[in-house]
Amino acid sequence: MPDTLPLRIDGKDVPAADGATFAVHNPATGDHLFDVAHANAADVDAAVTAAKTAFEDRRWQGMRARDRARVLNRAAAELDHRIDEFARLETLQIGRPLREMRAQLSRLPEWLEYFGAVAHSAEGTVPDFGEGYLNVVHRVPLGVAGLITPWNHPLLITMKKLSAGLAAGNSLVIKPSELGPAVPVALAGLLEEAGVPAGVINVVTGLGPTTGRFLSEHPGLARLDITGGTETGRVVAGNAGRSLIPVTAELGGKAPVIVFDDTEIEQAVAGAMFASFIATGQTCVQGARLLVQRTVYERFVHRFVERTRSLRLGDPLAARTQVGPLVSRAQRDKTAAAVDRAREQGATVLCGGRVPEGAVFDRGWFYEPTVVAGVTPDHELWYDEVFGPVTVVVPFDDEADATAKANDCPFGLAASVWTADAGRALRVTDRLDIGIIWVNDHHRIDPSSPWGGTKDSGIGSENGLDAYRAYTRAKSVIINSSGRPFDWYATAEDLRYS
Ligand code: TXE
Image (cartoon, rainbow, N blue to C red; front, side, top):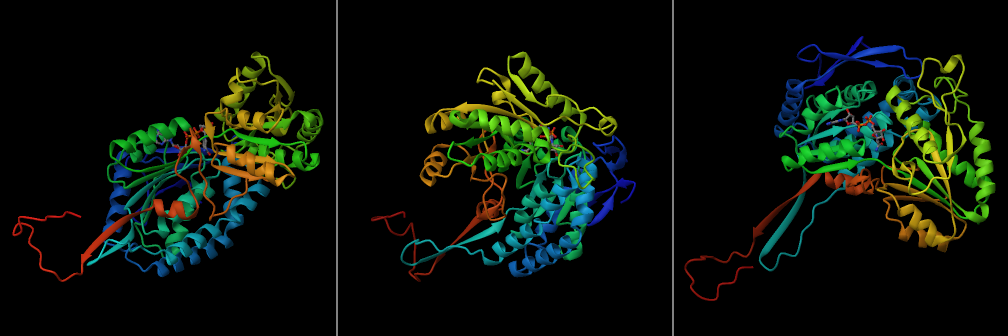
């Protein structure tokens, strides 16, 4: 790891043109980890130009899909060897417990394998254009895609976007989060070693309002793919819209966890804890609203609070730690402010709701896992995304009440439904205006399974065939195979334009 992490432009490690850098700190200890090049407008322009040149000379899009797939499979095998190294680096930067980071990263080679297979098996279509014509519709890559990624899963989210975009033959400019840039930069090097030609993947590190903005405003892009907060998504989509650039945006969430009284309580509690507290609650699909049927509400809440109190906070590198710090002071303060505001508005904090005490917590951005009751639609905590280890518990009466409460939210990213009744599960999932719904589970993800939300949760989806298709466009070639002579102006009558 160099003292200053460079930009990656046209296959070379380079500093920012003006030499600017910013620092990355360990959120568990406050220690300075390393400095990172801060790309300015000229650097972003150089990256887009390199990507455009690589696209136009067809060094990657011109390869047969099976050969691109072979390169992605080689990269998957190499990534597999480096999981421990990357997991440790992610934990140092974002504070997520090492046991969680290892579990997450060990799945990532699957994305390269899946999208390689999709590219290899993708086919065009031949619509029925009519007698005397052959219409061949190819799916072709778009050009240069800009990827803007967040800190909460730095490598997973980069991988989701990168694997689809690369497999389809695009060139990329990646702007990773300023809080967790190291692994996306290392990934670009790994892919080049596996055979992705120089210039196809470029990485510009920097802050959102500078580097991120320059990228989202760049007219050389053919597509923008962002994961971040909803307000950032609106700004970035607006910038892209001015250049008529299509956008995929995976934004905020406030996932309901709906527990019916036919569920075994211990399993429902374990599922709700998994939903609410992994990644210290910093995931867009976090179980932030536990909707529990009134008949089992008291029992559920008692057990949920008891188990939440027993979670082990601490050093994220330690094997026994279950909950790490928040990623930054800003994120910790935002979490504390949301809980304080709920208290002021009359809600009851059942556990947590404070910064933990003790030497291990003194220098990091820790906050206790928190359960809040008595939250109503009049409270900000009902609607606002906290992005921290905070969840609310709310009773409901029946299926109609549960779905109404679940849908009463500006976000529509994810939900889970816990019930032993298959018919009920189907009725409830039908009525939820939500993009990803688990039944008797939460958080599960697969490269083949679409991932995206409704309403303020964004536009389009990652993963699966839809994501691959969104990195391509139709090119329609219409061939007149009739052999009939044709002269539009020679015939005065019986013109038929079809
Ligand atoms: O994310 P940002 P932040 C939510 C969550 C969190 C809030 C703020 O609620 O509390 O967003 O987090 C880049 N033009 N999520 O500030 O700002 C930025 O540099 C172009 C939900 O960390 O949205 C980073 O690379 N780019 C979420 C990326 O956008 C800009 C994940 C995301 O940063 C930009 C993260 C600009 N003007 C936060 N401003 C999820 N859905 O998982 C920022 N960026």
